[in-house]
Length: 79
Image (cartoon, rainbow, N blue to C red; front, side, top):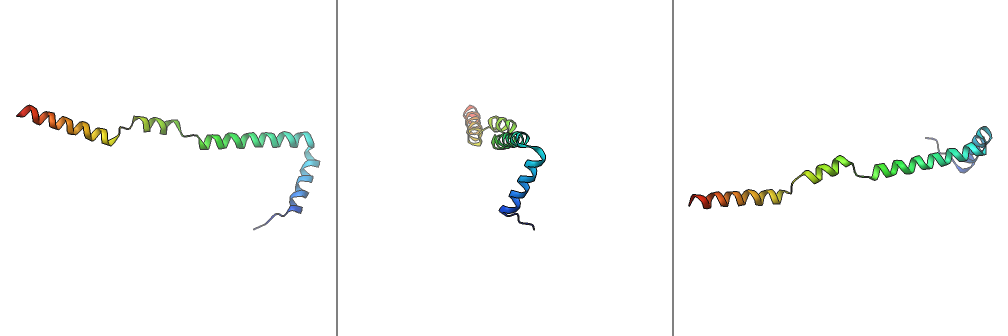
């Protein structure tokens, strides 16, 4: 694998600066930073469908208690 040292990175940056000019490199850096920030926000934001599914899923303890209550009521009605 290639490892880029500080000297190689400086040479690459100088070539990019010469080819594109200062204004375009600044704009490119700003656009890249904005894109990365938005990407990280989207990755870290919980998916709306996951949140909705979690909200719609009943608590198993509540479901179990409701079923138990229904059974007790049915048994009480038979006596």
